[in-house]
Image (cartoon, rainbow, N blue to C red; front, side, top):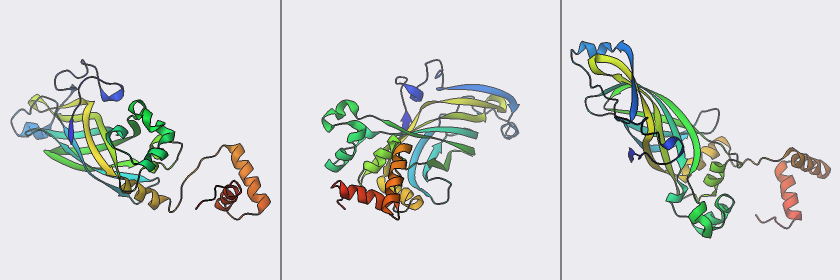
Length: 262
């Protein structure tokens, strides 16, 4: 699903009326003639192409330096207009208010949004990450894989949110698009236009996709960041008890505190 937002709102979602004049993007001429357009003997349309975007699927990038998801992105240009190149910037947001939550999810999300009775004011959209892509020239429709790196650091809000969701649920995502589009203008001159942040696409990503990515890169593991003083105390406890692993040290502490439920 894709569309254009209005001019209201905050952050990169909107640009000023002046920045969105005309076709919603600022266009500049590079002063160079596009040989492909000139060879056709006809002037190409002068306006910045009104691109539309849709996310059609998601999967796991198996070989990457960090956990990475890939989103199947479709980009469409109007009939009769060719895009010579597209430098794309993408903001990925989690539209947390666009889904319902079961009792267990509400408990796990308390740290982020507070008590459920307050969610009318505290449940809000979350910035997940930024991504970028270079798209080669195309006419009509282009399809690319958009890589999105992830983290398993539970100090990061997005990771806390994703970990709190049930395996059978979905993550409501919003993709906001901006960037520079190169195209053939009047007389075949190669021009560049700036896309505002008013292009968007929504996608319901299965939670299972994110879990597969984490399990692929961190099999049967989760990351917990500790203050250095706390880590030193834990290390000293482990050494005194001659415990073989960090898990054994934490299990011993939990059992001693009466929180050893498995």
